[in-house]
Amino acid sequence: MIETFTIPNSLQNRECEIRVWLPHDYQDGDELYPVMYLLDGVRAFTCRDKAGNTMASMASFMDSWDKEMIIVSIGGPGGEGECDQAYCPFSCLRDGTELSGKGDEVIQWILYKLKPVIDERYRTNPFRLCTAIGGYGMGGTLALYALTKYNRWFSKAACLSCDFSVGYEELSGLIAGSYVDSNTRLFLSWGGDEGDTRADLSKQVGCSLQLNRLLAMQECSVYPYQQRGGTHSSESWNKQIPIFMHYLWKE
Image (cartoon, rainbow, N blue to C red; front, side, top):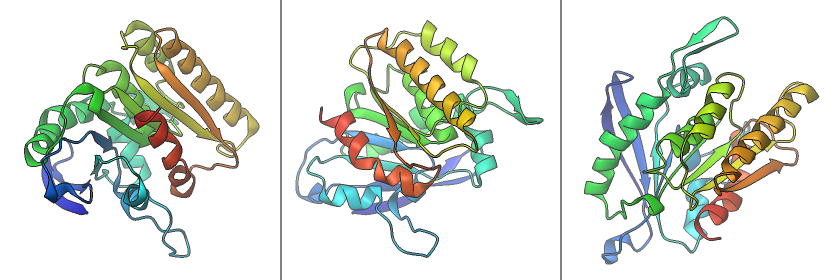
């Protein structure tokens, strides 16, 4: 069952669409459920390929998964460029364009504006061990940032195809200098066919493995995953849903 509502987002001067997937028997009991927040997650619930055919999605996965939980999809700010502006956690230049580094404000909005609404409106288990975040592209980078800086609130993150083209030094410095609880879990993935050149892929792999090492030093559990033939697309990311959900919530 999916419920939809809007909530003011003062950061982007608009109403943000929120979609909430609820367990099938939600109305019949009084159980409290863990929650996973998905950045720019609208495509996670209803996904179609270029031909218009419905693809696997988070909703279809949850329909058949045996762990009951709540998924909160946060509507993105718009196009890819707008997502980069909204989700980049650090102010920096990329190809002559300044990214404003509003990602930290987005996470604070989730924690202090959206999460209280979700916790009041639904039967959630609001504590850290039952709270996760996920994203892809720059959203994946921001999810990793949130897991590190706001580890007091998030214990799990799915970070797919993170954008390390900007802010990587700042992110690695944050991870190296932060305390991350040993019961933290991170799924960190990239596609084997992402990037225009082998050098691009090599950089992605190198950055991912270096961050994996920094987190492992704090005894954080990390699953570095290269998707064979994976591309920077919803089709590739959706194929990883069963993998990261099982790792984050069941292992």
